[in-house]
Image 1 (cartoon, rainbow, N blue to C red):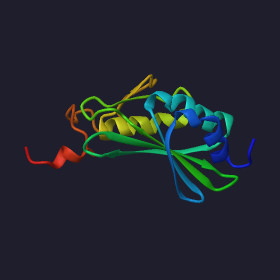
Image 2: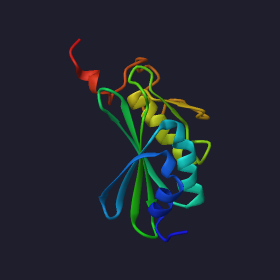
Image 3: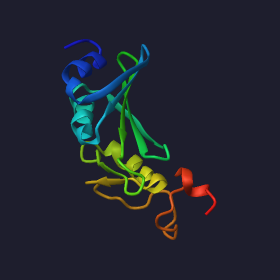
Image 4: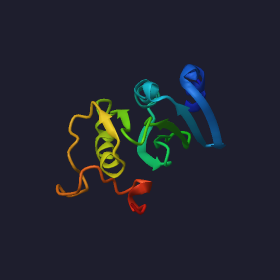
Length: 148
């Protein structure tokens, strides 16, 4: 195996990477389909031993984009998997919580803030919003402040 995780990922998982982008020598973005997310995250996290940093979400107004950030602390590289939820009407992703507990809280947060359902999550209860928060209202969605 190569000394750099990104070289291993590009070699071993080339078939599932739709697009790769080197933002700078230590920062890589890899676009993948959501059907490949579990396998790719398992490979990066378990096989290569990279640290899961965080998942971030962006409402693009057409879809919900999720960015899964992994850090190779030995090299200083950050590798980000970019995945789209598939629709704004019913955004869904496979949960990575069964892979590691580190994914549990951020998936709950993204569920509350963006409305993404994480299929297979073990405990999708509220984390930030009060129990009386209106169903179907997501504070970080672009259209929440649009006039009706």
